[in-house]
Image (tube, rainbow, N blue to C red):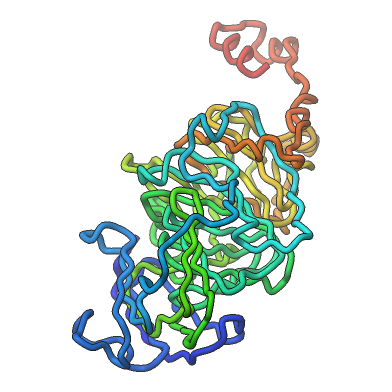
Length: 474
Ligand SMILES: [Fe+2]
């Protein structure tokens, strides 16, 4: 991945209202260094901190890594973001956000878990109040770990902005578009698209479609990258040019009682100021929010026999210090052709040293004939066995080895996969949407083992190797 390509661009965008998303403009590319001006000439030329910035603006920097690392953004804004009253614990406290997982606040289980789609509340609920943690591992304080959240909301955030000091959000809307105002500009994110909101950015979420639901992966201490393509070569999977970055846009004027809600160590704090935080007239750098349309993904698959590991469809990865071991991979299962010959085409039965949280954006999932629904979720932790349900297995075997090429359509499932074993929040375990019958989907799997048939195939001579394999397969 070329993280520091020299793409530079400039755009002139008019100042507009924060609820007006009719004027969206994006730059494209992943990890590029961008420049964007809502007023031409607002970025000083030749230096970052002149004595007086053009148009009397203030200069401010957001760093996404240490100062000696390259991911940072230089902004020119009407007032610095430090201009607010002291932070105070939010009243009421949130209570369902976790950023440091231990025995005091979460549980662990090797059991397969599945949740039905969670109802969207009827009472007014915005993105912040509708956000809740399901599971996670590690600690935002120690800058290593992740949290998996969901949100159910029906109301736009009003006169407030959210800022996550703990980590980066990867947002996966499942129902309802999100209009996300950020300090870099505006993003419209529809179900089937994702957005990444890096640590420290202030943003406000409006819900143009009303009732909304989605998933969020939050990572602590690192950022998402495109996966290396290895033997695939230069092209395939998610292309850098399909990642879209907002262009500069700002609000000015008084906003009395405006509240910044800061998530810090999983707790919420608030601070008042009298102006919009979306007052950035121009910016440049490579630490930016972005979005990606999953339909643009170029999936790879076997074209003759057997079944690839799901890692082949990694969209974004957050690395650990160990090569090839992800803190969190975002993997999708998009529409695609299945063509493998004499092959069990659904995902194989397996146990994984990584832990797998799955969600479904639309349609069905190839390994589950029913029960795994759009808006639902499942969790298979480290070494927890799982795979196709009984109906899927029997239907696959019934089709036989002569099944022709088949295209899976109308589907978009995804997986957050991590090397860290998640602890699960009590409200997720006790949720009325927990599918307590999930285990039954495999109970009906019957033995197809036939000693006589196997005996005939090997002319009656069973070697020790044959016996070991049959015991494993029975
Ligand atoms: Fe799996």
